[in-house]
Image (cartoon, rainbow, N blue to C red):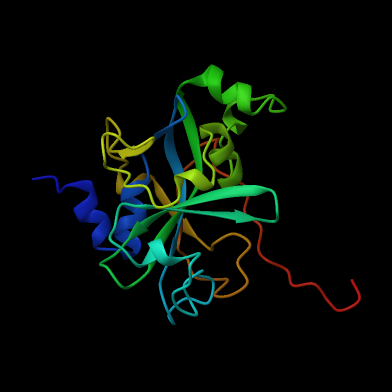
Length: 203
């Protein structure tokens, strides 16, 4: 029997991240098939996690339950979205890094007018949120509530384990080589890997 998706996400860890590949995220008249994700552990376990130093007003939703959205603003210009995973209290989450627009292409193009190729519409976590029209208003939403403006569901087919690739997370300032980024092999919508390079003083 296939487990309910929220139940799987509540297990946390690598399995939760892998399970999100191929799932559909719908918002703002657009549906994206997730092709790349990145897992983050909770308090004290993962120096790259927003919950590493404990609970704050910003990261409160990360502490559970699973299946809710954690949306944050970065670099003073971009919104990014995570799906909360793991049992309550552990603050696990999975960053949604990239996807393929499978419905609402015109709406996605209208939000991403500078993009020339459709494969680039949601290629990267900020672009994905932009294509879907996701911003601060999406923080803390239950992604499995039929009335929610942002919804998560399984796709029409599961991604085979053999088609999933793992590698280091992108641009993190700690735990650089932890292979908690997962993507669908050879998918053109997957974002470019960039390792974080700390700036030297005076630069």
